[in-house]
Amino acid sequence: MSQVRIGMVGYKFMGKAHSNAYRVLPMFFPNSTVPQMKAICGRNQEALETARKQFGWEEAVTDWRELLKRDDIDLIDINAPSDAHKEIAIAAARAGKHIFCEKPLALTLSDAREMLAEAEAAGVKHMVGFNYRFAPAVQLAKKLIDEGRIGKINHFRGQFLQDWIMDPQFPLVWRLQKEIAGSGSLGDLGAHVIDMARYLVGEFSEVIGMSETFIKERPIAENMTGLSAKGGSSTEMGQVTVDDATLMMARFENGALGSIEATRFAGGHRCTNGFEINGSKGSVRFDFERMNELEVYFTDDAEDVQGFRRVLATDAPHAYMDAWWPAGHTIGYEHTFTHEMVELMDAITNDRQPVPNFVDGVKCQEVLEAVERSIEERRWVAISEM
Image 1 (cartoon, rainbow, N blue to C red):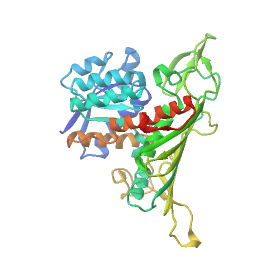
Image 2 (cartoon, rainbow, N blue to C red):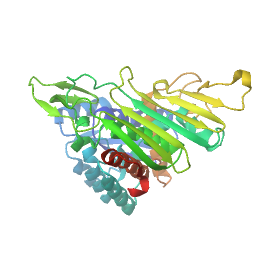
Image 3 (cartoon, rainbow, N blue to C red):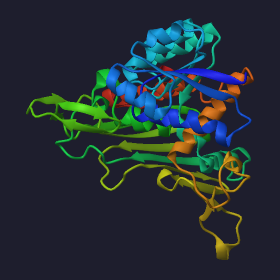
Image 4 (cartoon, one colour):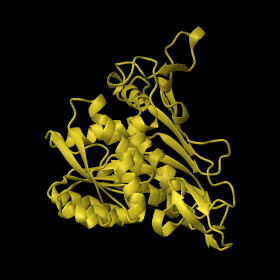
């Protein structure tokens, strides 16, 4: 295929990130299949038209079902709130459209499994949006692990720390409502760390968790954009129905131990999405706030120079970097989405499933629900129970 024609549902935070990725992909990856931005969909006609012009889409529609009827659309990109994922994805699969869906894949494990089954039955390509996999420094960590250069993995230590809702007057945005978001910091932030752990270390065996909602009521939001919102003039309050923070411990099938922390109440942490992995021959350490760097340690270094070294993952041998700038010229958050779309376009063109796909979304959802069950029942929960 020379191009893939896209209909996108959603136009705010992720809608902008995806649109930017589609627009810049042909400039920096000229050998890739070209994504054609056919139509963008949202409910607010005025705001949608503004987004259409700003992001560069050809058309705007207010009913996503219209996208499924069109012969000039090959792929449905779903970045609407989580409660809309299942209905749109299943309808898209039945219409024979390829699917890109933001994470978490669904509100529940049963819904995620149903989405996967429908996509597989339809024979369409399906991808889930775990974009942090696509940072070149993370790709380097994967390479070192797969090549056995840090040995047998003993520990995974992951965290995703933010502080954007610490103010009690911050409004009740949809991410704080279980019926829309599914869960709070666990599903929004923890899902990324769980996926990273699966990608780098392997499958989870069992988990145990604890969580807390520190602020249980918030002002009703007047409007919401991305991660920002504004409260109305009313003093009406609404109940927060998700977790503000979740901590979990885990065992992996390969014997490694893991710990994961996800919170929106870590003052001073804007987006500390990181991990440290310790193996028998060395360690790797990553922090998304310094996303171009991977800290690497090898036990066989000479004793007088042992310790973590900083590797700047911007040279041409590092994943995707030969498409961007000269060595040392760093890239940013938005580039992870471009790399994601490179994978998606290549998979469609070469008739294979992209990675990560709905299988990874289901596997992540299994861990999320196992953690939730563990918190509710105050015990270790095996993933096999799910």
